[in-house]
Image (cartoon, rainbow, N blue to C red; front, side, top):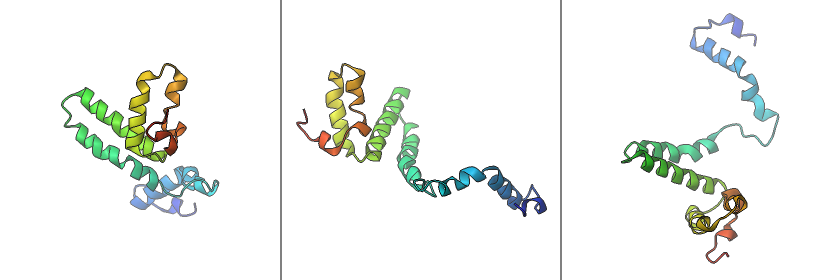
Length: 124
């Protein structure tokens, strides 16, 4: 970085160049692997409901209520991230989880182990 030594480190430009210099590998990693995206918009959009939810959790009557809401948000967003319809996924999990007796039964209900056909009513 030829410009960095000529710029005052305390200026905004200097701080920006220092950040670029210190994080060069992370900022250019997407160039080395075509599967990586140049931005994180998809991740930001996925966590936006949590941000809204977090504000709502402040008004929960109890800590347990806030935790339950956060847990539900997490399940819904994970279902979406795995291309599952959230209501159908939750219906399947809430129906099957009480009868799960092994770790394997529970793991079979994780959203990345299911597909849309698994969520149809009368799946058993």
